[in-house]
Amino acid sequence: MLRSLLYPALAAGLATGLVLASPFVSPAPANAQALNQMQTIAPPTLTLSASADLQIAPEFATIRSGVVSRADSAEQAVRENGNAMSGVFAALRREGIAEADMQTANLSVSPVYTNPRYDSGEERRIIGYEARNTVSAKVRDLTDVGEVLDAMVRAGANNIEGITFGAEDTADAMDEARRMAVARLLEKAELFADAAGQNLCGIRRLAENFSRPQFANAVATRSFAEDSATPIAAGSLTLTATVNADFCIEGD
Image 1 (tube, one colour):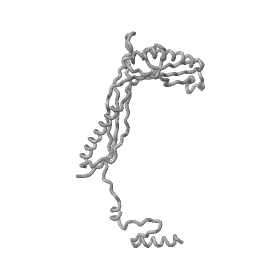
Image 2: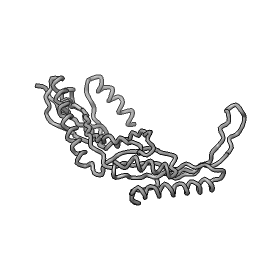
Image 3: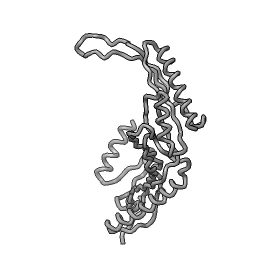
Image 4: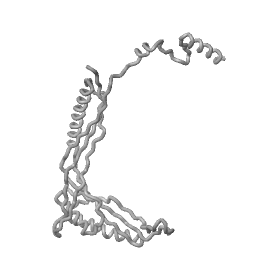
């Protein structure tokens, strides 16, 4: 019954240019001009981001090194690996590394398989077991990094994963990088607005995208002199800050 009454009335309204309102539909503006007056048109927005890098000197080095052992059984691999790692830890202590600055970074035991040709028809089979143990050692005196690394190798370390450099407190330096990033962002906004023939009228939103210290990797070169330590180049740390913002712009 409702459908039979509504459809004829709707058709008549469309034919005469009238808009019918129902209890279920909000009344629409009479024309497009009234609709535009009801809407709030947001001013143009300029969205930009900027980054800044700040270089600082490293304060310590972290060496990740350890022992990889293979044996016929998992038990034997673990035992041999443990004996070798005991020597590595002892060497670190002799080099003056504190117990709090030594930490096991990885410990695993896994089977070692054959690797037959894909067309040989042979199945993979276990031929032994591999034990891996890695220690992370923090060296606070950067002049000792090469000597500590060599001592670990002499003690039995046969797997050097790498050396990274860091700093204890980067908060102040990160704040400086943030200031630099914001300054570059404002300069960039002025440039874009001027190129577009607009004026900046405010900042609608300002946010930090990310900020982090990027720890430097060491560069090591083996010396030909047997009594000299492996030379290590510490380089510098890069602190990166990135900010983004929405700017309000308007014409002259």
